Amino acid sequence: MRAPLTYAFFLLLISSTCESSTLEDTCKSFAAGHPSIGYSYCVRTFRADSASATADARGLFAIAARIAAAAANGTARRIAALRASEEDGRRRERLGVCAEVYSDAVDHLGEAAEDIARGEDRSTRDALTQLSAALDAPGTCEDAFGEADDTSPLAAEDAEFRKLATIALAVAASLAPQPSAPRISD
Image: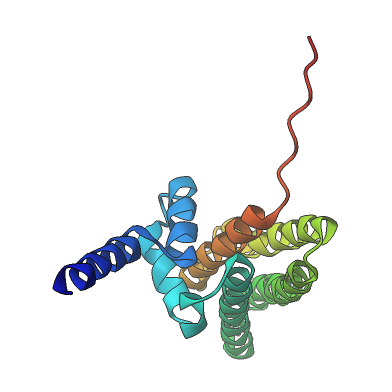
């Protein structure tokens, strides 16, 4: 009697250690294409939401989009506070550029989440377009300061949002239909 139980336990142990979660598989794939952001950052990002432990790829996308949108909203609030206290009109204008692109990024992330939720091939491609547009926000914001030879007060927020939006885009891309290979006839 003891041998079958030991054998069953051993099989259970092997299968649970060989099986990796969707989150881990997603982050391994992500890290392979984005080594500068990496696996640990990806896992840490998703684990901020307990639902990620059991989420499928669409669920992980929804989580990534929500986390990125929260970061964009937080950056938008910081921009508003900086603008309110800024006395230099030109710097206030640069902050205005950042405010606009982060507001747009929040909208793009929301639209992408709706597109992915539809689950259609075309809507997934639309989501990729929306996410690519959202990913432009940090660069545009940094450029507004760089072109004026001014140090951006948002460099840390821009870098963080870029990472989060990159994760969301990568997960969405994994959901997109892969183009079929052309048929070659002899």
